[in-house]
Image (cartoon, rainbow, N blue to C red; front, top):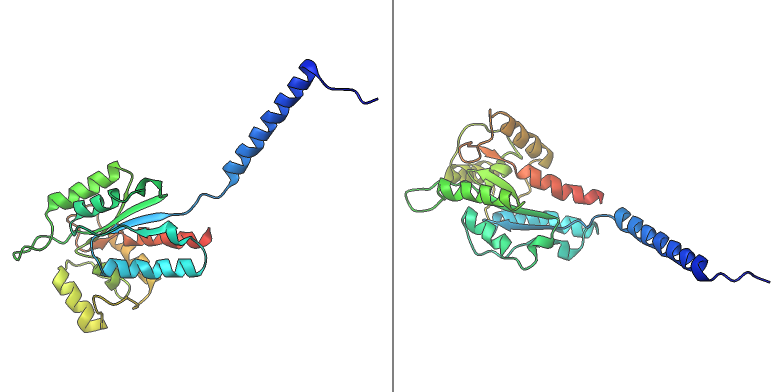
Length: 223
């Protein structure tokens, strides 16, 4: 006759089984891959967005990431602090694993365009305090494009930079960029940053760390 388990012995057995189930559940959660997701707010409405959307399209085509995991925040502002506000205004921005803003130094011009140093530096500081990464360019995002084709370590303004890309390489501002080599751009951007004795995004023209954001996105391909 089978021995009936009951009383204190049966209670201990059930307790042990429940404990083991909790441990197994915990192990399953711990070994589950971290969901890759990213939200980005951009200063521009075309240039940066076109570039990023090309990368997004490739990731989606490779089925490496869900459509809802790659988000460009709704654009309302064209200054660095405003771009940060756009990201913070996204309903569930806090749920994304990676959070970035893409901004330009773009110094003030006599015609009223550009940003103050205070605005730019405040965006850097505020983003850091909230755990948000910043992909910056000095003078503007197009320096990242130029570095795909050539290395440049002498100062240049936004207008001169855009004119150079247009006249020498056939670049059109509102069209996707497909010139040169991304690997060369990454190497050139890293070399350029390393050439400065310290990090000073406001005053280091030219400079950009967009390659750091690109590295994050490229890393999605391995997940």
